[in-house]
View (tube, rainbow, N blue to C red):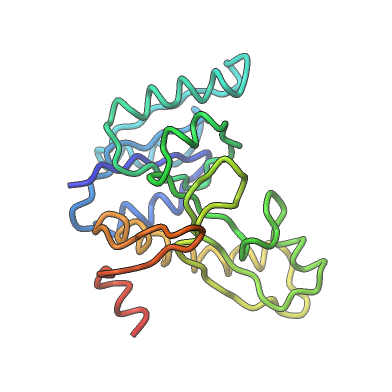
Length: 208
């Protein structure tokens, strides 16, 4: 059984998709947040999952917050830390501590459009597709080895909200699969490429 700790900042819809997937051999040990008012905390608590929050505004520096969050996370002995809409840029110390066992979902087709406002930037550049990327977390923002990507069309007249809604549906499919593949030991990092072996049943069916 692998312990999963999920970090959120808001309603945690991707967290909910992972919890609802009931991934074999995965225990959602805790859902944690930098926002005490994050709606996803109440959702997780209602389902018997341990929750806690550390308000980043109460810390003098990003480093102080990350050290405190690491101590909190490590109480749950995580095999995997999942960033599911965790709106914080992480320090190198945090990234190194969870190297190769921390994954993030980013709302663009990396390496394009790192950072914020990804969907509007894609529209402004005239892109015909948008999407999401699940990747391992490294010290360089949005630059870790890519586990999975999902693609949606950008239609004429789309707003950023239109694209975001379309992408979110794909995120809810891909993220639980990526967690399942990590838990099953199917993911092997070679440089910046993730090699997938012994895929989960869900992913194998998707790729068939």
